[in-house]
Amino acid sequence: MRDYHVYHYSFKEHIRYFSEAVLLILLVSYLFYHSLFAVLLLIPFYPIFLKIKARQLLQQQKQELCQQFKEAIFSVAAALNAGYSVENAWREAMGEMTQMYGENALMVQELRHMLAHLSMNVPLEELLEDFAQRSDMEDVSSFCQVFFFAKRSGGDFIGIIRATADRIGKKIELQHQLAADLAARRLESQIMNIVPLVILLYLNLTSPGYFDILYGNISGICIMSVCLLVYLAAYALAERMLQQIMAM
Image (cartoon, rainbow, N blue to C red; front, top):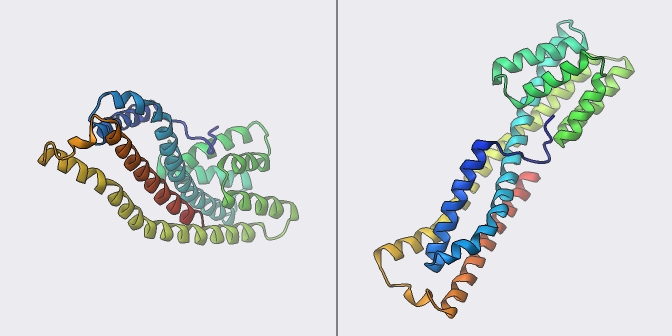
């Protein structure tokens, strides 16, 4: 099953992000160096570009999985309350999740995997623990611990599961509110990242020769290289600040 610690690009994503990287390399080569030779020097940064994209896509994937997991455990709690056994409750949850998100949704794939192994007499606790390790999400680990305790203690199993689902649901709702607030900050950051490139492009197109002193000579290449490094450092700092806020 999927390892959520590592993002695996699909073929279409490889094509998409390769095209984006090529356009970005061409743009940077033109704006900062006016040289096709710079393209060759910047090509080795393509793996770094993919790594940055993978980190962003992993974050989006975990947010999507977390939301779907919340819906799944609510479905499980409702099925348990209706009198279903534990295993059948997960089957009911998969049916509802398929209707809500489609057959290819992350949580639907996980539930399908669990049910296939349940039919082979693999304990549900073992399957949930495996999911918790692969997803690397605190909410999943917390639910697994409570689920194990509730099933073994023989107490108010349904009440414990529902209370846990409510707690995780409230936490996820707070995270969604924070994500919505951060979306505006991320948009501002993206605009600030684009502005320097737009200014350079505008001056190059509307005032030919304005930056000629910075191109085609050692001192100009050094100055533009420093400017590029400062720009990349500012971009990295903005991304790091946003990631730290989201991790809180």
